[in-house]
Image 1 (cartoon, one colour):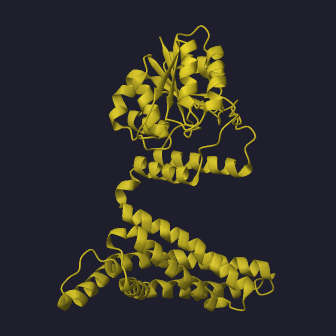
Image 2 (spheres, helix red, strand yellow):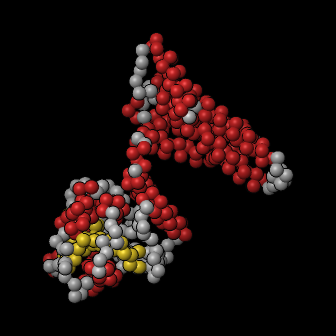
Image 3 (tube, one colour):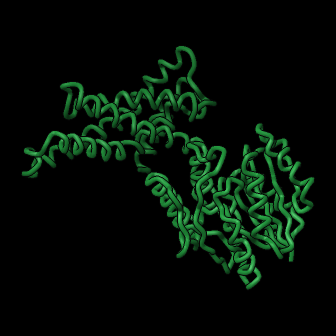
Length: 395
């Protein structure tokens, strides 16, 4: 039984040498090959790996010149592998190569997939910051909830499997996904998954690839794999993203008004919502509805249409805020509370009010402000009114 260890790389020139050394030490007595799959790194990782391959016949290099990406690189590496078993390991030395023999033994004992796990007994995450720990736990919990992944560490990028099983699902895999293991689990539906503990180590050299773009890709991947993606269009997802950013803009504006001005109560709520409304229109016009974007003087007309259509949502938001804060003031301990607590209460009420008004805001503007077609002038008002009533009844 031959093992092919695939390591996707990008700007890991300083880590390739130590990785090969650790793998060679860990895999003594095992028939194996190491395949470095590099996305044409600017730091010449591929060249460093090729130099090492000249001295070690077990090392091969696959230099990819197009379609860069971690998932695609792993798929190409598994496809080019010559072993009966394929393993994926990061080149940044954060995955511990010493557990590979145990992982291989577990696979040979009847497992379908063996995963290097940070969250089973004996595993660990090293010296992560509290924020990184929380982010990892949230990402793991989302994977379990949306995908039903029966793993302690479904976010692991360290795993091995039979190459014949990979070949069965290769055509169904989306290489654009952030975590290729999630793709494989969703398509293969393995019966027996084993997790082997290890301690996640600190990066030795180079920079982490984790970024806000990666986070967005991961969330999109979860939606795609869980089936949620089929319920929404790309336009709706963009609109929802704009709305989420708008919530932050709304709350920040509310905070500034409460702390820096004498504006308070429903006036502050209305002003914050109005500013966020303008922000959302601009982003939606040039992103969510880019194919129908208002241009020139149409931007002004479009905004007034947007403002008119969101007036009901704004009214719902402000009225809800006023009702909530009035109700809370009837509770005896709130009037004498510190100013800081009072501000927090106001912001919490504003957040709840935003949520209630958001859906109405979306429906109206999707149907009217950025209408899919331009009906004849004589029937435009009638058709828009009909759409308005139909959507109200649909709510």
